Image (cartoon, rainbow, N blue to C red; front, top):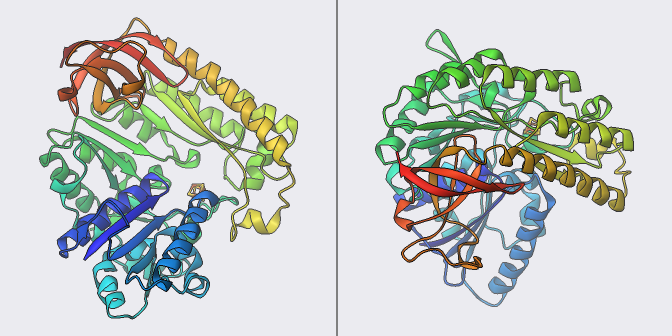
Amino acid sequence: MDVYLETMGCQMNRLDSELVVARLRAAGHEIVASSADADAVLYNTCSVRMHAEQKVFSRLGADAQRKAAGRKLIVGVLGCMAQRLGRQLRKRYPCVDIVCGPGQLARLPQMLAFAADGQPAIALDVDRNDRAAAEDENIDWIDLVRDADRTTSSAQAFVRVMRGCDRFCTYCIVPFVRGAEVSRPGDHIEQEVRRLVEAGKSEITLLGQTVNRYRHEGDGRSTRFSDLLARLSDIDGLRRLRFVTSHPTDFTDDILQAMAELPNVCEYLHCPAQSGSDAVLKRMNRGYSRGDYDDLIDRARAIVPGVSIAGDFIVGFPGETDADQQASADLLRRCGYKNAFIFKYSPRPGTPAAKRFDDDIDEQTKKRRHAELLGVQDEIGLAHHRSYVGRQVEVLVEGPSKRADKQPTPPPAGQTQLQGRTRGDHIVVFDGPETLASQYVHVDVTNATALAMMGRLKAES
Ligand code: SF4
């Protein structure tokens, strides 16, 4: 069967899609680049932002019309959106044949076969309150059948270390659609990383909604996240090991020590703050105070030399005052983030915040606060990136930069504008031959913007 898969959402979704592709190919299906001639179209969609779901609704409307016009087509919705809407999806869009929750993706080949027989196929994850069932489920069977040789061609790969989330931030749907927090066995993770490294990957990013809360109990021992880092860092050929996303409440010093001491663990920390105001953090149920977050950043800077830090913020959360907004701006300045992802709050159906609080900050105010924090972060990001001018950095080359064809001055013959990342996750742009993709090089930093550094290629390492 020719299958078209469209992914909308976060890194976890993109990894899920990569695993789905491997699973479907292993079952004999072809993955095609356009939905026009596909036998099946699948949408793997995040529920965290309204925008992704709206895009799928419009796709489903078009698919319904194609089917009504007599086109034979299997339509499937996968991931968080499928889990959130469940059977309602088929009531609203009878053209949908497959509804598959994020923990059920390994069942897709059978579900496609069912749908090809004209039967709807629905597989949703177990109730998150049924922890025994969640733990009994084989949480990583799709991860284990991953085909390391058929991942993307770059030197980078993501590896999931845990599923779900138990934090219940009031604005977030994840705990309801990705289920209870369950960590994968360290043996499984190590096997997967080894296979990826043998297949040529040298930078692995460990993924979890609250990755630093990883803890696996088994075989009479308890493995903490820092133990997992130590275990993986021993793998020959693994040059860089990163992890996202961390939660401020569980960032203990043993993890910071591991970052400082294990040579291939990168000095990069993505740790969302969401707000600088205690009152807002409380309404968000983030589980820490502003003081706790300040303390984490101070410990990180003290223990991990040269650590670069990224943060996330939400503006316009219900009840947020101008003073709360100033507390967030103050936190941005204090943390000196490399970059910060700043979002405007919008209520997501099914979340505690949508039920408990009025969305009482008007759109104009949200826009103003959003622009204000972006402006503050621009200054901070520029100062941060400028501090590297005159220094040499190690860069893993990702390939041509997004603006490679828009340069005012073309690069020398045989070269293009390349983009890569430092260990601290800084974007570095420089001219060089495309053959350097997936290699490590050294770059002299000559200039900087709020989001990136520019430089001159030095010598390969
Ligand atoms: S920690 Fe909070 S924001 Fe992050 S996934 Fe869990 S509930 Fe959502």
